Length: 139
Image 1 (spheres, rainbow, N blue to C red):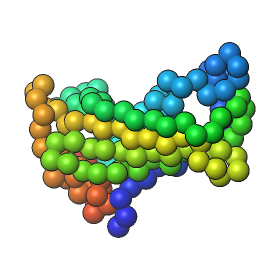
Image 2 (image 1 turned 180 degrees about the vertical axis):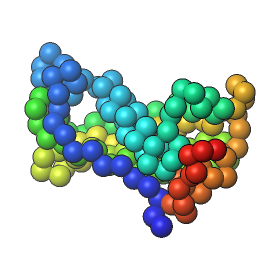
Image 3 (image 1 turned 60 degrees about the vertical axis):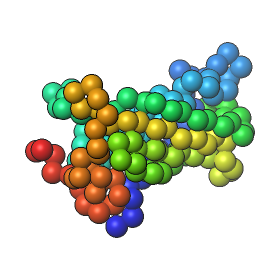
């Protein structure tokens, strides 16, 4: 099985645009976090506040803007697992404009925390993120 990925197709909303009618740069991170939540839900590891054994704080973000996304313009975001470390997960994302030209690309790295300290990625989650199988959500 390939590693899981999430794809969003949408239009740039008013709330995501700046006064000039273009993607307001910090909003891409909210869209990326939404994709992360969908990916984790898809592998059976939803970010449920009642399931607080593990946390996933962001420790590194990179973003390169190569094209302008304008208000109401369609775009497509592709969000994938880029690398699994011992205690970290790097996600890769790319945003394409209506003509399928790369508009934004970057990475987001999270550290798996348990009890306030870095922890190894739980084996079932590692397997799911590697595309080996889904996590049993009852864990």
